[in-house]
Length: 180
Ligand SMILES: Cc1cc2nc3c(=O)[nH]c(=O)nc-3n(C[C@H](O)[C@H](O)[C@H](O)COP(=O)(O)O)c2cc1C
Image (tube, rainbow, N blue to C red; front, side, top):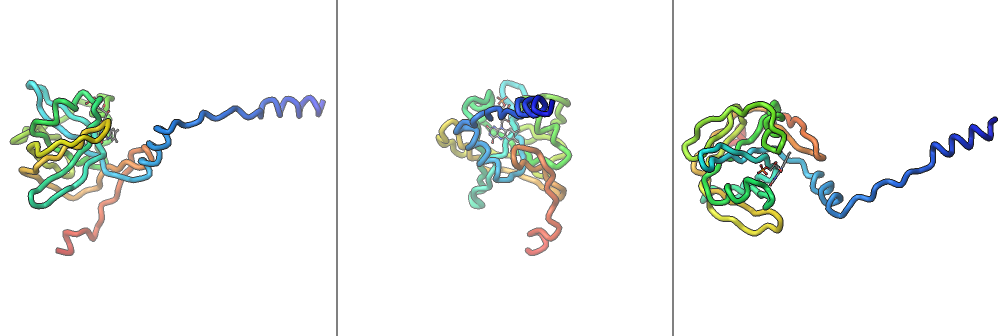
């Protein structure tokens, strides 16, 4: 009886081989250890307002004022965004659904704001309207540099992305604005 039970148990506990992560998955996991904010790059093409969620936003230069986003070549936005004005919208912590909307999982209808050079999104923590500055080969991505023509920001908690999950980042209370 007991032997049968043990046999049953060991049968149940027989280790199933874990799937071996591919090199690409291991690299994706390693990249995900670097926490970031979340932005949506918005633009208008052929009269249609479009956007793509990115976490590759980087500030680049003050003079001239430049920023960078890295856009995957396979994205439908890729060919459209590289040589036209665009806006980078920094999402707040309550805008996870907005992030999903522009990452291939449309849900709510986005609330658009008419920008001077490109459409923007309502309720964001910061926005930058840009004209195209340069585009560099970045392997399966293109590094798109924009020259910032206008921008605004407000206080609030940003949406974060860490370990491949959305998270809330608490606003720094004693931020730089108190030091300068
Ligand atoms: C949090 C997050 C960050 C992302 N960051 C980027 C990014 O930096 N660059 C990029 O090309 N795609 C990024 N993506 C993937 C695109 O948002 C997604 O592939 C999108 O559906 C492409 O849209 P499109 O093919 O309609 O242009 C990210 C997605 C998420 C959820």
